[in-house]
Length: 411
Image (cartoon, rainbow, N blue to C red; front, top):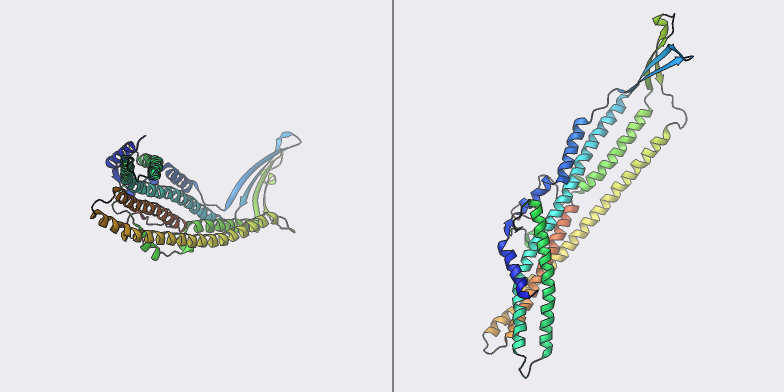
């Protein structure tokens, strides 16, 4: 595979690509089967979750006396739920439904994060391929100039070997960039359900400067807006309601109501009919084992909530530091490119007659190399930006916002 063939492929990919908005790609998360299936499950759960009644369950028992089928005893028993049991059961059902919604939100967060990362990679792919297309031309020119100068007395074979080495390195890197571009482009096509060649539109795409402004204004309330914290908090609430409901059940004094009928030949109906009531009389530690287990679980969930709060705050703090560092490096590199002495030297060299074209080519290559380095830094910044949005719970905060659209109001 020659470098000309690779550059030809770059040109075809870049020219035939249909720009696709970031909104269109992100919206596919809401129609993803992994998300819609949870929505259907939640609807089914809501429609089929009934409140707890005063009566828990009923039993109908029958037995014969002396194996005589004519002498039967029928017993009808109904177990009760106290007002406290009903209260905690209703709250538990409501919290469980909230849990289903948070599971759905967690799945949506995963799907959106995947798409954000895909958009970032595809966006940088295009910028990198454009820079590499120009760099490939320069490397080819430098190699050709050296090959034509091989008969010169002052010719240094080390220069030609270095040019060949740079050429080979670029060739291998080009193959890798091409593969990544095709892979990301195919993933976007699959999400959109199209066979056309598509790519991320650069119109209104968030810039490094936009991210810098966003970070300077970044604020978060862990206990109010972070769904990771909200999910763990709900686990604690469920454990607490489970404990309170079980305790209320243990304290329910009326265990059951009962009516019985003994069918004995020769006796009247009133002599055969009886009613009764059962009371719970707690003795010693009877029944406390289940309560202790639930209380230990509640303590565990409380501890996990406190631990998660500390971990999330530390992760957010560290991610902000990482993002600030990347932004500083990008700013420094951008300053080198904007005020590059080599760029000024290039303009001066062009005015000198008889200047070696190799020097001009090398200067242009160095400038392009800095552009490629800045592109790699931009991808790192986008990834860290996505990570911050994820950890802080902002990806799925309502109303939903496209954080890759610079025209959106992030606050």
